[in-house]
Length: 417
Image (cartoon, rainbow, N blue to C red; front, side, top):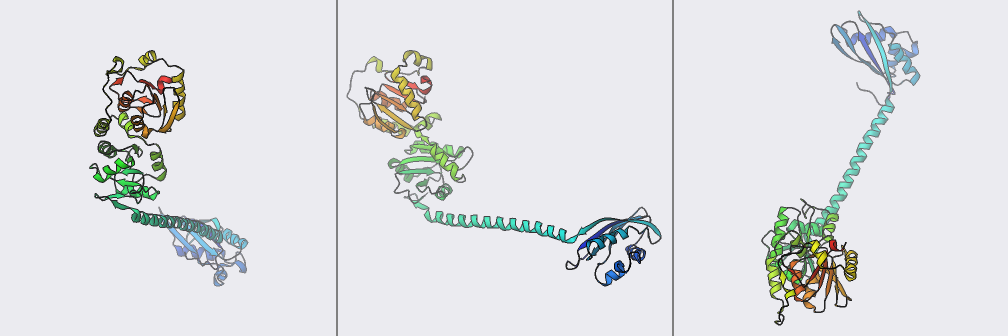
């Protein structure tokens, strides 16, 4: 039914039931015929239609089992009172054609209210659409600009043309990732001292860089990342290890997870000990380069034992004295800081250094008697301590140690609790 929005105010909705088969024309005729003269000249349907104060009567019928049933609608521009009187008049009709019938006025609908509701609902839809498009457009502009800057900033570094950030050449610390997409993701968040290896075949460009810079390997949290990390640890001079969350990739993690992973990086040696990764090349070369000490008669107590004492033996054989208790307090203080504290033979603090500098500092010093550090006690550290006559090493826990020097007293956080 077509309703003129300029004239229609109300819509009369009625339901009709007839005891026989009737047609639409029968219903319309019955309404006009049985209401004629009923409500006076002012509300005569024919006159109201001529003056366009009511619209066309619309009838929808369905016949079933010898009976007819359907709906009747009539649009009007009358006022509310006149409209409801007209609706009530519909219910006075008791026959349609030759059949008995009843008409029930179900509703007088205010067309303006319905139209207003539709306008509001549609306006909400349009507003949501505009806001969503604006948001997407805003994000798109930012992303487009950011990506353009990233592409401009990414370079090909060295003879192997490794994808890298613009600061890779001048930065004293570098981050090593797997591929170009990883570099782009880190550039997106302002990390520009990054370089990619492009797979498990580590380029010489990256190997050479790691000899000169503090190097952090930042790999995916999956099997592929583990393989690349093993290759890096065995072929390059890696200082720290950072990993994306398990099953996640560096190229797709957001800024918060990138920063968290880099903040929680751990020394490469500790990582290798924790996961039983052999860094044979790195260990062998560095140990071989240590200056040989003048030959001296080895005391029996300096011989290394091949058996690592258990915690009970440590407790019994190595008395936890006041000094060692103080080491326990210091260990608690530096916990989580990746720092090491060095002491001389008078138990005077010499200096506090990052754990990554510990092995180099021990090799260069001859007056260190004790070390307390926030890390894992490794075989390499014990070898250096033994060669430098360091008496005590205090750390978080013991790694994969096969030869425990009897001349070095080893204590862990657990021993001091």
